[in-house]
Figure 1 (tube, one colour):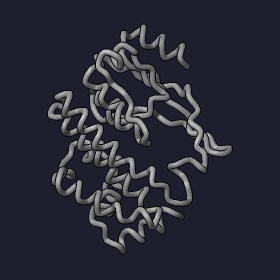
Figure 2 (cartoon, helix red, strand yellow; figure 1 turned 135 degrees about the vertical axis):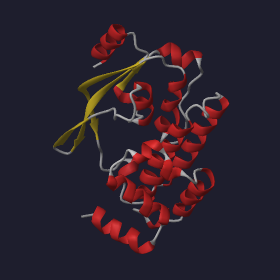
Figure 3 (cartoon, rainbow, N blue to C red; figure 1 turned 120 degrees about the horizontal axis):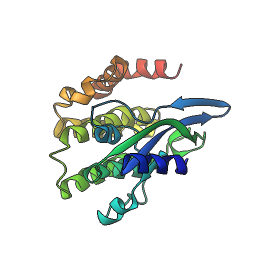
Length: 223
């Protein structure tokens, strides 16, 4: 894997290379494309796609010279950190080949049957990311991209995760408050508009927080 990523970086003079992967659960193995097409600019596609570092090769110099460090003592550290690289990389290459096996474990933090307060780290991670972009004077240039990250990771994925647990339902109002106060026009986001109907309907159900709609959603989701 590392050899192929390195050769790709050398061949295309790239600062960062991404490869596809397999998602492995029990005996099932699914091919996953690592980078979605949001823009003609691969740097934007990188910023808005899978933020995990394990399927990427990054030029060390960029991390060191720009003091880019992972958020510590919290989960979602990849989502809080990896997008920052967009301010410093010149070229991103994409190797459409699955070179990594991502093994999903039933007892992991994200897939536990009982509530784990660690998932509340999403709020810390979002704050960390926005603070870093502001301090590095990148927030205005990438305002729409940052807004979409909040839509996808907080409103869509975050709400869906908290909904699974009775203890997490109190966090739904917190999410809605953030969307109302900081992103009142989130439905006009150009990346949100490009998403499929299922994504949009889910986001709207989560935003409205209608108990009946959410209950129906939960029944459909668990089937």
